[in-house]
Amino acid sequence: AQKVTQAQTEISVVEKEDVTLDCVYETRDTTYYLFWYKQPPSGELVFLIRRNSFDEQNEISGRYSWNFQKSTSSFNFTITASQVVDSAVYFCALSGPSGSARQLTFGSGTQLTVLP
Amino acid sequence: GAVVSQHPSRVICKSGTSVKIECRSLDFQATTMFWYRQFPKQSLMLMATSNEGSKATYEQGVEKDKFLINHASLTLSTLTVTSAHPEDSSFYICSAPPGLAGGTHTQYFGPGTRLTVL
Image 1 (cartoon, one colour):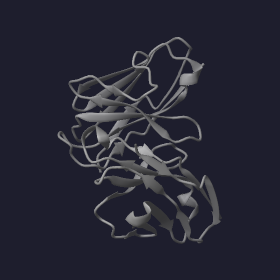
Image 2 (cartoon, chains in turn blue, cyan):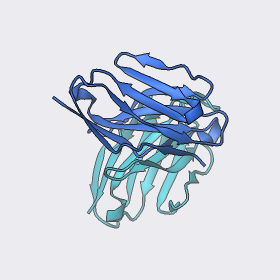
Image 3 (cartoon, one colour):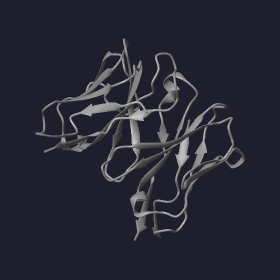
C-alpha cells in the first residue's frame, strides 16, 4: 500500500520569506514517481514537478526547489522569496511504476498562505 | 503541456436526479483516465480507473452502480452520478496520463466539476 503524509496542515508566512513544505511517503515499489501539485482557490490542479525514484538529484526551477531524500523517504518542496500569488493548497503525490498503478496517492495537502 | 477538459465546470441538481460529467483529452490519446473526488478542505481520493474498451476499476467503498463510468473513446471518459444525493456533493476531477501503452507518468488534470446536490 502507498501512503503520503503531509504533516503541515496550514502554513502562514509573510511575503519574501522562504517556506518549506514537507512530504514523507511510503511504498513497496522499487520504481515509483513523486509529484507536487498546486491547487489555487479555483480548484484546478497545477503540475509542478515529477521525480522518479532513481533520480535523487535536487531540482531548482526559479523560486521553487525540491529536495528528494530516498534514505528518509522524503520529497520536500521549498519556495524562496514567497509571493502572495503562491497562496494555495499544495499536494504531494505518489504513483507506482506502470499500468493501473499510475493512479496517484495524494497527501492531505498543505494550505500555504502568504501575507503581504 | 497536455490539456484535459471537463464539462460541466459546475452543476447544481435536485436530489434523485442523474448527472453526467465528461472528461476529454484535447491533444492526446489516453487508454486510461482516473476519476478523483475531493470534499471541501480534504485531499483528492481516487474513485475509479477508467479503461478504454473495458470495464472501469473501482476503489474500495465506491459504488459502481451509483458512479457509472464509460470510456467511450481514447479521448473521452464520462462519469455519471446516478440518483444523486446531497452527500454526493463534491469536486470531481479527472486526470489522464498521455500515452496508449503505459506512456508518460505525468498526469494532467481537468479543471474539475463542482457538483452540488440540493
